[in-house]
Image 1 (tube, helix red, strand yellow):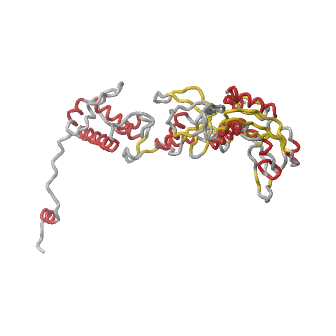
Image 2 (cartoon, one colour):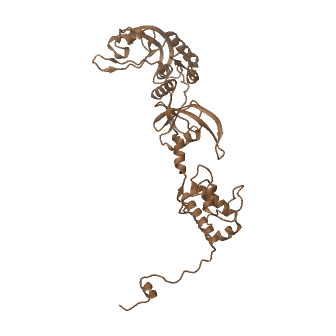
Image 3 (cartoon, one colour):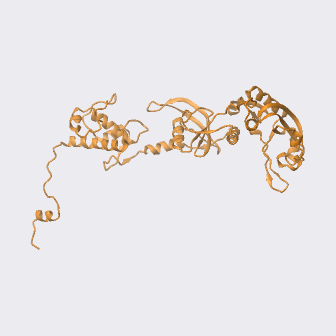
Length: 401
């Protein structure tokens, strides 16, 4: 093989050995161009110019500061005009951004409170958590055991019951507003969440209104989320839901007939004659509340053989004649009002199977009388039963104690 010169060898290998022309840009101009090209890549990826704000990624914040400074440099407009195909430099610069004569990434990062890596690559940072890490930490917060969960548990029980009976519904978060108020219930990550307290208004570092919340979870824990953090968590959760407030029960007594309505009927209150030790001890308090369009005597004729009636005979201790009754709404009302006093008792049916009757309540008869009166005058939506005081109280009274 004949000897080849270095140039001939490079040519045979397809390598262009022609010396590169000297750059027509100064080092400073090259920095301006390289910095602007980073901004262009961001724009083409995100479809918008980089923006300021603590909620933004640190690199977007850096590019936003860099863009403001380029806008303030007359020489940058002339140098970058051919590259500014999206008109980014023509945008109105941010107020209060002073003109500068250099673009130094380390200085910009220092201005943002971030240290760059020793390698000088702004895409590798040190001594800083990512924005996503900080956001997740704030949204999750530190959940701790709720020491006074006993006073909130009846509220969770009531809401769970309302959801089962249809007295309440769930809606995608944001459908009826994204505001979060004291007393609101939500479903987050499949768990019922209660906003027990909303603290005093505070301003975030970017001037937004916020507040610290006391959030109680159905599993007996609590956290002190910021309101905006809870909002973000609910938005990000595909299954996040708002639980509707207690609705007006609607026309329990109505002139418009529906499938479950009965033209005339009766609310009846039963007392069990069972010899079960617990029932016998609390016989004067344990009552079953029902609705029928026929004769009560017919319904209870075979009570001793029906687990619904605690497999024992019963006696009728009160009855209230009504007309235009919507049975479903009426039963849902009683279930909601007395859910905190529902009898927790399991018995065995005739075949030895465990049964837990669900329509018996530890409630004095005079309280049931008051509940019926409140149903008639429409004030029933304002109260629930408080087992501690054995009376009907406003919902907020139970929460505040």
